Image (cartoon, rainbow, N blue to C red; front, side):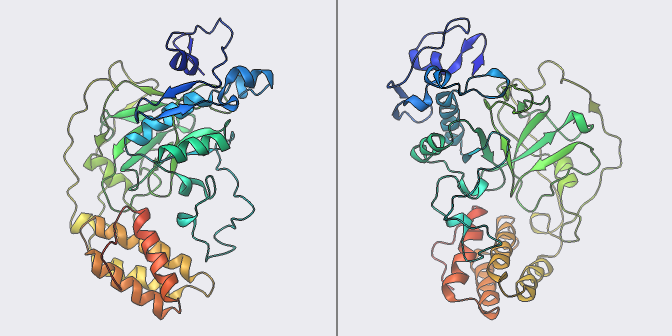
Length: 379
């Protein structure tokens, strides 16, 4: 991959700028130290673009895939606390291996607990440097991706100008940002806790990637345009402001939501100079009624437990896992304690005919995927 007129990966490995008008040098069998981790890695032929060129292994748009550049980027992102994984070249998750069924085909198979490198999409995301290196070895020509949500501590606003998406200064303060390969933007905010919807209310062409989502990360190459994803400026990730949280809360009656009545101030096209650079301003947290903005924690808990009780046979473990994630978000919001939430879920699981082992696994998996610990809790 290229940047500022040089081959990024080759320049990183050789320690000197390698202009793009020069042939890509062989960097195979070279030892390199990760910037974020300090670990030493030995590159292989599959990570060498010069070897790849000999095999005609090119990315769309004629750009050579440089796995070492992706590895360095992945390690830096993971060092910042965000789990990463690899997508296929079409921006879709890599297909499961033959030993891994889909959850709907085998509810007993836990995608969160699966130990395979690339199966089950974002469930394969990790912060472990050795596992990251192994994933890139397995998918050398894929796109780097970040799992979003509470597990990563971020929610990402995805703005697509092709569908009318614009940056709204009233609800989107300056923060860490990415210019996407298709000409849009990804705005990173710290996850506020609690459930978030996939759409930003009142703003066409603007989605939110949080729990259950992912975004393509720099320096991946967009499969359609051949353009790289790139970080804009050096701002840290800002807290999600109250106005944006209000637009992203699910309108299902479980969370108090008030929609802004004032008109927004969209920014058409590229943001003004300096919008994404410098230091982000602190934004006050959302002020919602109830714990974590949950208007009625008992009613929300009852709804999660009722879903388990109503689940048809064959889907109960999966439903219990989903309920556990919902209750874990309540724990994170301070609406219920971990022991009380765990006990309620355990009783619901056993009443639904689940074994002790399956019940515990589903609850712990749901809590783990919402970054809520269950250490020391016994059902």
